[in-house]
Length: 605
Image 1 (tube, rainbow, N blue to C red):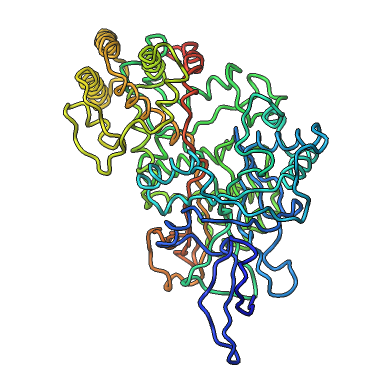
Image 2: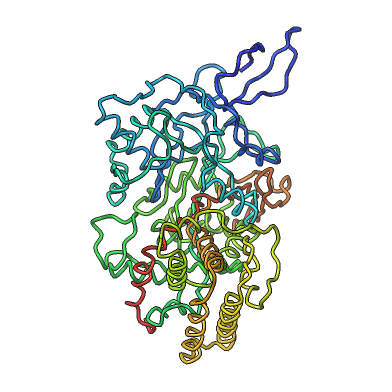
């Protein structure tokens, strides 16, 4: 939109100014919504700094629809297309999603319905008064991602959110419409209920703080991509929850829980879910124990770096998706737990996107759904094998050298050092009690090599060094067993190592406790992430040279095809991490109960 330059402030702080232009001798400037501007290059780093002042644009609840949710947050997707508005107006939120805490929505709805309007609520169509974003401290999640996660996994893999302040009326209406639409899984409904013990993030008169994020089911444009005005390219997006890509080797695993030494945590949880001992939020209430089919997916395969094993992992995920594998086509979910497209729909997508490039022979006797998933998983294999995201994530996951059982014991030691106060212990863990080191280095003891990737400075403590040396000895023992192909461990050696480690932990300092637990919580957060791989095919392989994803744009890869006419096809893609929030220290309070369930699995199962 072209407007004459005036001295008045812009109507919304979510706008930026393009370079000025001359038209008929009148100096003009173009004002474009910054939400449509990609977070690229050096601007990606600056877009997360606090704006000095913000006036929120108009928020229309009917423009946003429920998309998905996790334990704490609900995701709403902007539902108006880029070209649905008459004239040359550009939709400011096209290609974006809102991430809102469910407890905040419930609080606003409760106040609106039970306080009889005694608190001011902004009416629909009214903008909020000017707010100073400097008054809001940077959220723990934003700081965690900016200072720790981005530098360690790669800035190109994680976009930081923009903070926005939503009117109370908007939140009240979007809460009501979501509840009444019956789209929320029944098992998730309790997290939408008002609880007076839950503290909202922002006072009722200010509105609700939320986060504006890229919708990763869409792709940003790129100069190398061909522009075809006759049709919209077909875009496939896959969300994967990789889980923990390692088997614990900590000597602190309780004797009754040592099944953890032989199977991944994901595999053990599948066993427990199938037996009805534990239950996940995404399962249906009607599913009783024995009805859930255990997945054969192994995170070890996905993180292996081997093309064959990565493809095997993706095939197992696609065969039994649960909540760990979901697929979108042009922004609409087509695959997921309890979601399955028809053969006709799959045939249409295959024809639109993979015509002539299918990765399996069309003569193969399998339905269109299997053919589509095979083409998708084969393309994903080519992307995941070459990018560094998974190795970088695994490097952080391996900061867990104490296991959940050890975390329980160390947390209890920290509470004792805090004169029995769990609140004081939690404040130390959630706060900035340790310095963040800029580069990895070797510590004063051999065992510190296990935590060489830690972003935290290791405190001076002889008992900590002795403990880490014991952990290092235990890791070396298991590596030797694996090389020899021996599955059974020496119970005497493990018991002795267990006792020596516990003796060390009974004497470690407060800073040493914080150091070990912060690394464990960091690992736990990266075991619970999701990432999106979004891609589209490009016509003309000769025009596309392979390129890794970087801070400015996505990557390009050339994939092999089994089609007789076309031996290769080119793909433009983006990989982005989502749901990467810090784990609060209060999770440690009941951690013993979480770990206790594993003693029901025998070592022979």
